[in-house]
Amino acid sequence: MLELQYKDAWPVPSSLKKVGLAGLRLLGKEQTLYYEWLRRGANDLPVFWGGAEAFTEAQKRTLLSPRLKKRFHDFSSWEALKPIHNRFREKAWEQKPLQWMSYLDLNLRLPELLLMRVDKMSMGVSLEGRVPFLDHKFVELAMSIPESVKTKNGNLKYILKKSVRGVIPDELIDRKKQGFGVPIHEWFMDRLGEQVQKELKSFCDQTDIIHYPEIQRLIEKKQSPLVWYLFNLALWWKKYFN
Image 1: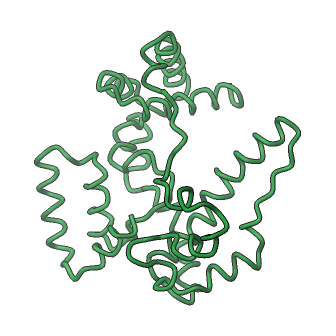
Image 2: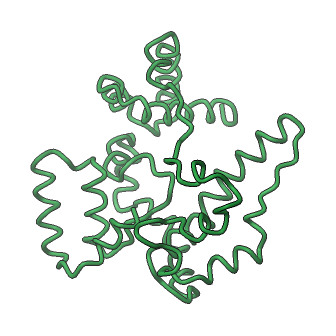
Image 3: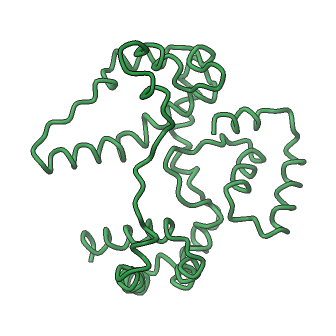
């Protein structure tokens, strides 16, 4: 994503980017990430909108019910990010892409997602979690380091890895990043698939937020991760609002 942000800063006219958008639309690629990233660049917006994006703006509009699609025709997720970006532009001493990415995730993804999960998981088994990298003095130091020093030869964790080299085995430091994958597709192919469709149909009928035929289309195309996000939304609504 950082490399993509650098490429977006190339001196390419917005008009040319919009021609590219038109070409992608003709090819039926309007819902792809490539289209969305180019769209942001053409509108002079940051490419990075957070580290936990699930749906493109085109996908969101397609999924919305006809009522909400009409109501929010002129809105996008940028409405929520714009105040954070304005604060960044006003206060950041260095307004480089990596600094923006760090600032946004510190304000958005960290408190609302990662820290929340750690707290709930640890408290669920009576454990006290500690996050030493979030000591405010440490964060201030990290945010004061120039982007050119933070990265080297494409290594986004250059300083961190260098600081623990010789303390932590090299095979751990240099190991390829691993996620926490969940076998969503396998679950959907089993009995969970029926429950997913039942819960989502009920959610759509009762809320008129999501257009159910679009969910069916995602299921038919085996877009399991996207359906999984919507399934969680439906369960959340059922528990706290139904």
